[in-house]
Image 1: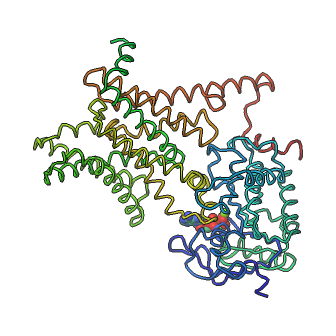
Image 2: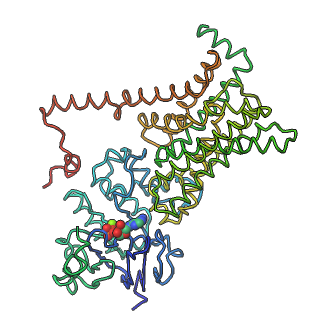
Image 3: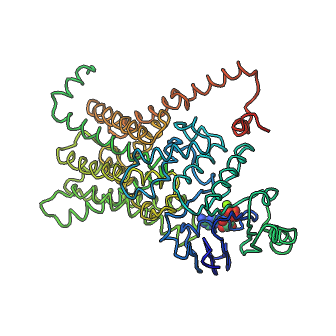
Length: 245
Length: 322
Ligand SMILES: Nc1ncnc2c1ncn2[C@@H]1O[C@H](COP(=O)(O)OP(=O)(O)O)[C@@H](O)[C@H]1O
Ligand SMILES: [Mg+2]
């Protein structure tokens, strides 16, 4: 079983200051599936993704990517950060941002060349942004920003993708376009872990779901674990109620 | 003196040529490196570093006087400034990490302590009338007119180092500044890059201290960048334009203060740099105030008098779908 796990997490605990933000997380993401991560604001969804990506240093626990530590598997994992985590007034263009997806394979000091530009243009086409290649990123709508980030992840050519709220603030058309791309990625055998906030669409989009609120409340096939009782445990009732906005 | 006289002097007068060259180069370096201060929102940090360097400058001068070798104490000023600047950031970081004080207050404390200490030591040095102490006064409001060939060489050295680092680390600095999380995810050492970028900004500050002075130095760091951002859409062109704006400020400041007696260079440079910001904010295409007003007027003519709807932009991307 553990041989099938694209991501395997055991006893993960993360704290920024004293209070733990993630507590004793055990999680397996089987290869070739789409897993949704849901939970209220501040429940640690972004922190979980950042811990897997090695951006946040855990206080304890173990994270394995295809059986090895992340640092040995970097190039097999792509990342779409939360759209609102960057300053979109940065002086740069869509093409330039998408090219950043090639930096990991380029290594230090080397600049992107023809091959990288072609790969970036191809990814931009896949997300339907070909008309905006040279557009200044401050002039993009939320949906276009999200498509740009997705294109940057696509050029990473990874096997696992971690995406932090890829549908946040996007229009209906972009949401459908992104879902289409995600399904195609899964057909190609990719593993996708997606932080999500719209409970209505969980059962349409994901094979597996993890309900998170500092601890893992439940994780498994959507049909098995995505029910009212688990949702109540995650979003309200008892002491967790205070975490609800 | 007429403008043509000044231009003639630039060609014939060796001192004025050195001074303009040096100040122009200072503007190029501070202007271009300042783009990172601007984009990383560390302009205030630049101001703290500049002010605090006065402490390093005066301590280094005192030590130099005590040792008393053949090197004039004033020659220790720039290395001292570097140390003082780094010290201020170390102090800020120490306060933030070991107390509950937030970073803006910590910067205020560092500034009060190190700039205050610097002014205090400056007074002591002046009252002791240590040899060469008059040169120290130039570090307050800047003086380009007394720039020597040795000073010019120092400026060239700093420029080469600063610009080389920025060019070598081009894509790494850019990605780390735009999206540090993504940069870390592909293995960029977040902490190291923070430090290197900060060191680069410190270099952009220290290189101009003697020309612009510790008090107004921050204007040459952030104003050219702020002005350049209005006209450009890419980091590369922003840096080039900021370098040009910085150079313009530096040269004008140097020449004006050389021609007008008893006028320090720093205020002139600051005024030119600020004027460039104002003009850019008003006149730049796309981002400027005039362009914005014209765009709104045109929209009113086309669509009637609807006030702008904040959600309009996002929905427009849906292109007619529900
Ligand atoms: N860099 C940080 N420093 C300190 N606390 C943080 C930091 N990032 C997140 N937190 C805190 O950790 C908790 C979880 O945050 P996050 O993982 O962003 O939650 P989510 O993505 O589920 O909304 C929140 O209480 C948040 O305030
Ligand atoms: Mg989040």
